[in-house]
Amino acid sequence: MIATFCLRLALGMLGTLLLLPARQMHPQFFRSHFITALGLCMAATVMGWSSRTALLLAGSTALAFAGAVAWSLDRPPLGWTLVVLTSGALIVALVKVEPILVSPWPDWPSGFQPRTPLSGRIADDLTAAALLGSAMTAMLVGHSYLISPGLSIKPLMRQLYALGIAIVLRVVVAGTALWFWTADHELTNLNDETVLWLPVRWLIGLAGPLVFGWMAYRTAKIRSTQSATGILYVVVIQTFLGELTSLLLLRETGLPL
Image (cartoon, rainbow, N blue to C red; front, top):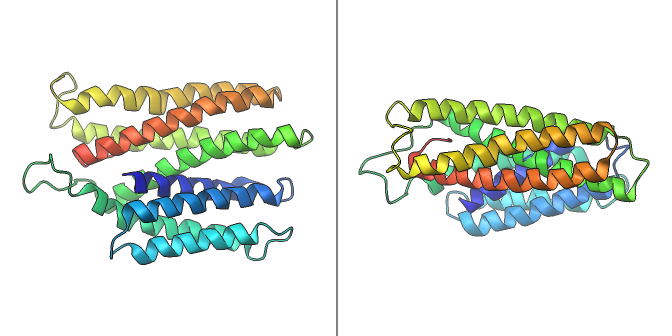
């Protein structure tokens, strides 16, 4: 579960770099993202290591390291290429790692298998990565205004737009899974542990980022970037808690609730 979370966060952080104008952002910002992704890939390698995933995890880690080295230069060689290659490697690693982390959950009935098809798992991974990455990157872009007061507001606004879209897509994926789950379960059955976790997942992990994300957007519109950054801290915490809860529910039900 932790390996999946780390890979999703790394993927999201690198993917959101494609929305940032390199001419306005200092290369060190991109380098810091790659260093963070490198640490996340290393953690995922330790947590999710197996003969099946070793090469993919090692490859993702190596690409993240190469990206950190490239973006340490003023004119990074293959900088954007490494963003794309590392993101692609992380997507493949997620597809391979996740079934191993999900399938052996001991509380499932005998013979039960996850019901989410491959397309659903990929949608789950991509929307979760987009939500985690856009929240984290938006918060870090907000910090950039402390050292570069003259920085255009466009980078932050782009990340906030991406955050809003990611929340909507995440709600669609989780709502679809919840609709399938309620076909066999009752939301009023408090003896079902999943029912007790669902309010936490939806209120903290989805409704919370939507409300506070809107607050950050309205604050950024008046160029109060420090206040927007403070609000985005809350959004990051909420998305982390929400996505970790989602992974717990995935292991419990086999669906990305």
